[in-house]
Image 1: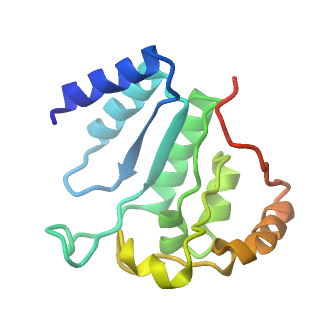
Image 2: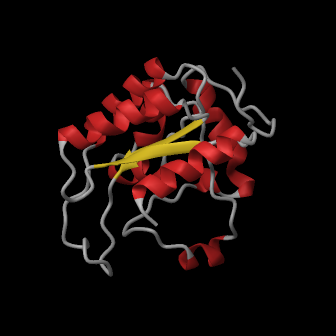
Length: 169
């Protein structure tokens, strides 16, 4: 599917009432600063309800397995810019940030993210969804660890909303 067709699909979904999202994988092989600027301009124009942003992390079994990971600092900087651009947007602090930096998930929250998506899959099933090598796993990722996640968020002045998580202006 071409980029133009994907963008057309996003506009159609938004027009018929769906909450829409887009995002940036920071540090993807071949990505330039000009690419990032184009992404930011598209996000400004499109006004998505959710914006995913995280650093590229290579997986050994892909053509990009030998490429370097994206920058945590650049990801956090762009995350902050996106928060300023879209104050009400749902912006996750990704597991990819935590994979590259032990405190990456909380740094993402402090940089402007307002969503954490814990992995509630049973531990013995998680290996079936292996996006990249060395994926961070938290005790707080399992259903029984949500109390630990809540404590961690409370320590930085945040709280968990138990709502469905829909976008609200």
